Image 1 (spheres, rainbow, N blue to C red):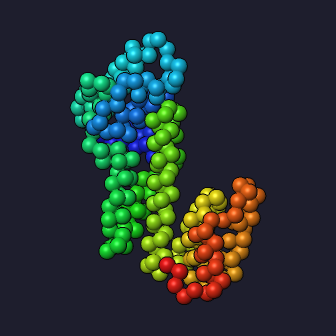
Image 2 (image 1 turned 90 degrees about the horizontal axis):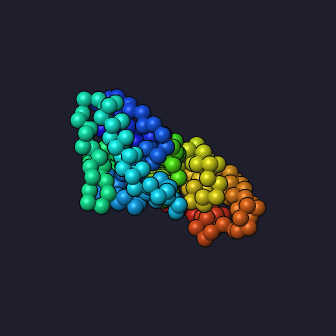
Image 3 (image 1 turned 180 degrees about the vertical axis):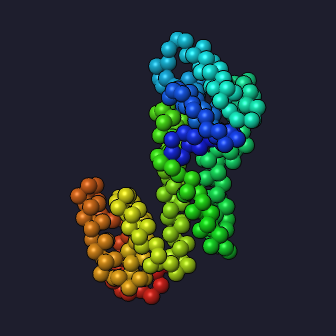
Length: 253
């Protein structure tokens, strides 16, 4: 069984996509999938479903949700025997799936492999990062509720996603692919106008492609945007990169 959380929840068993009805069932499954093969306590799951004001019947209700989720998995799965995929532990419940059967775990694995390969095999690192970023199908955990487990995971996943993009374009710039990365960096910079690292990478790519004026114009627009929306000036990294461009430094990466 595969569980995908980097977008609308997908649960796929032997090629059959299972429908998980109701936000609370999806919230329980997402919380368990984010900790595959590790126990999630009953208190954590109650907080995930009801926050700081759980009903008096929260324990029984949680047990009912787990029982219903198990029935959904068994009734609508493919050929696999899913009766024990959600196990009861001494303190809570465990989703008994290999971590790589959850796309979030695969994401972390691919990024770690890319980091290990970056210094000695940058092209493999690029391939691994592209594979990791391709796992996203939309906003992570978009239909898994707004409990604390999912909120914390969403923030962490967004940081991982942005970091993966940063590392991807750092490597591609070192591979002399400045001209090729400009369209993708322009899209990212437009999507995340306050993320200075993308602006720094974009103006670097523009400069290395012989477009110094465009690089400086991009910096000035970003500086004005930061001033208008945050009342801040660009950070040292971005300012230093502009000074390098003005000096026409021969090596920026």
